[in-house]
Image 1 (cartoon, rainbow, N blue to C red):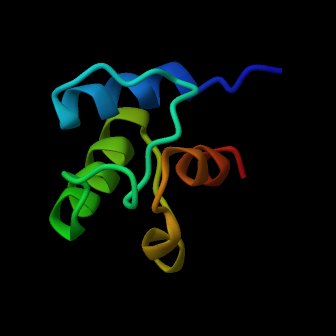
Image 2: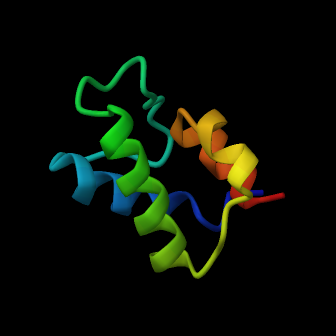
Length: 75
């Protein structure tokens, strides 16, 4: 079953990183030079605001890829 949030999260990532990011792209802190600690906070804040969700504070440091973020959203 396709992830309900994949397209929305990819669109948010595209806006934040100023390039097209596909829903199935393997983007992470390791692969994206612009994804530093400040960008990480921005990603979390924008996702929470745009999707109307709240990440568990203890999970935020582990959300270092789009796949991990989608897994957490779906919990």
